[in-house]
Image (tube, rainbow, N blue to C red; front, side, top):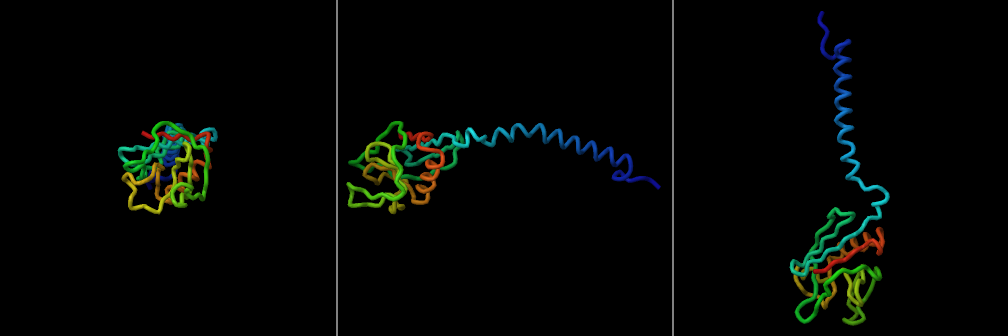
Length: 162
């Protein structure tokens, strides 16, 4: 009777070879996988918020990897959103405008004087200029960004508007 390839000495040799080959391939791929996972030093990585006035979008990257792209509304005609590079100055989960009829500004990230990135109820206006100068987001996205800034820290957050 002939031994099948899966039994006896020949089968053990083949299984050993395959196990070794798999191990070699897995080990060779392992450093690439590890480099894709942030270590504890970069877990508190930099949050980069990039706002395009021309496109009315916001890109959010963490440790160099883009995580989100959202529609925003910035300053409409007669109002301007400041351009430049900023850092968050203050976070307010619940805030109301002292200048514009107590308008709600949930999940506010103040970055320059009274200007903030915040949630809005005017979600139909997102994607086009509509604000008095603040950067408006969908409330769910504002919460996500607010939580990211709190998690990584205001000192690790950069805001660029151009």
